[in-house]
Image 1: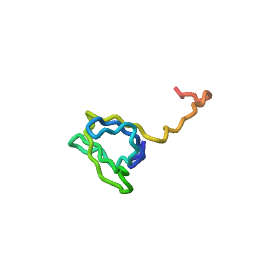
Image 2 (image 1 turned 60 degrees about the horizontal axis):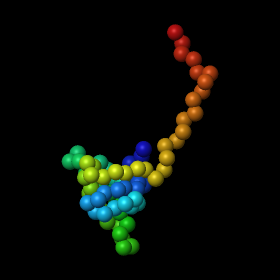
Image 3 (image 1 turned 135 degrees about the vertical axis):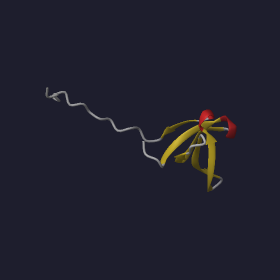
Length: 73
């Protein structure tokens, strides 16, 4: 996962249900630092990690395993 990155987040404190945002950082005080588009402007929002679920908009890259890989002993 790359930070900053686009996410969708769920947080009942701000009535967010799948709101899109840009995750800027996870700070040491236990908050996600987000930039959220609200009414045509971009606003900074800090939401608590303990009461927020989020997922990145872009899936992780699939790494294909090479079945011919051998470990030298």
